[in-house]
Length: 171
Image (cartoon, rainbow, N blue to C red; front, side, top):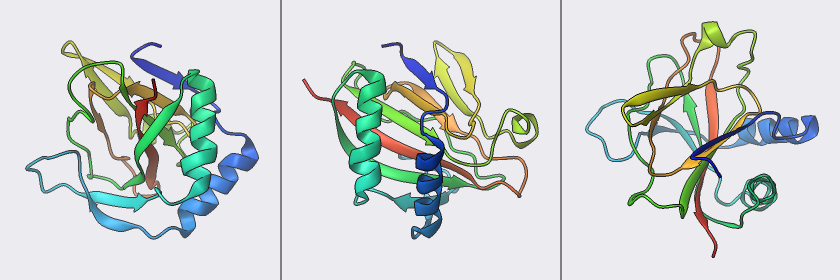
């Protein structure tokens, strides 16, 4: 598997609607941040680790598209509004093929409005930046030792939501 894999239209329309309905009903808190940083920048978070739809059903879908079996150590949603950019961080060290992160974008960011809304996820590999658009229903899977950050949307009408699975390959 490549270091960063992008899968568009990951969920069916019914699955996406169901996912968004759950997210809208979950209890959100303010205070998430990128790894262990010294920044005061925080954003909204939502623990999804007890929700079987995300923990089992969607994890099974991730296993099918990656052709790998995974253990999930953390499962949550990030919610960002303008100016609440994430900072550069890695999710797991040391570098190896065992630890990965999967992000699923569920906000109303589309090909038609992404140039205005922005909110990209940036990856830094060998001092080069790769920018991935946070398009609705896009799954991005990447090695957890890749430095990355989630940028905030540029307009207040969009609440940028990404679901995050912290994964470890089962041997």
